[in-house]
Image 1 (cartoon, helix red, strand yellow):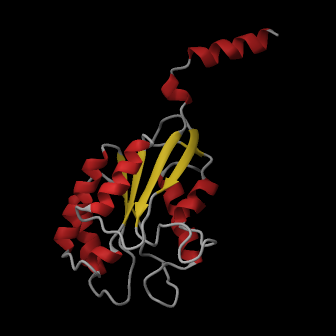
Image 2: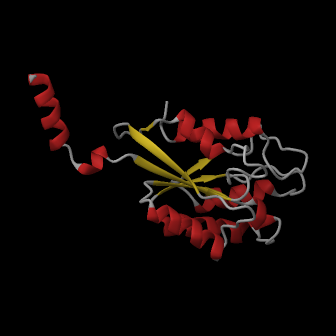
Length: 197
């Protein structure tokens, strides 16, 4: 009985922020959007949620984690409707962490230069007002200067966590979308960055 009373008092004495689960918002394009191209397709954010029932975030105490996936097929990080929608969704759930996974459409469809893309990534991180992690651009075979994009982001994001989405990454037949093995590999790298292990 005394143990139950003590536990109850400790829970009541804990600040609300210590009890609230960590919220992680995954933002990106169709390589992030769950249920695409089929409703059964699983993406990296869902795999991270399986790996991370709790998140430590640097040296802080581990807390339960809730993941929200806001990726939209065709999305770009460049200012406009896509990033505005995804950042608003992250703010609505009071995300502690925002993970940006863009680049394919910024470089391919939009034709952003490496410097433009890097500035857009930096702006999105700043607008998130949260801890921001950035996934490097995947090594698309049809985009010969992926290294330039990733170097530009690294130069603009000094001190921010950049998670490798190039090494060991492979694609389905379209050379645009990551295959399941790569989605799982990426999930592991994100889980490590979030302090899940």
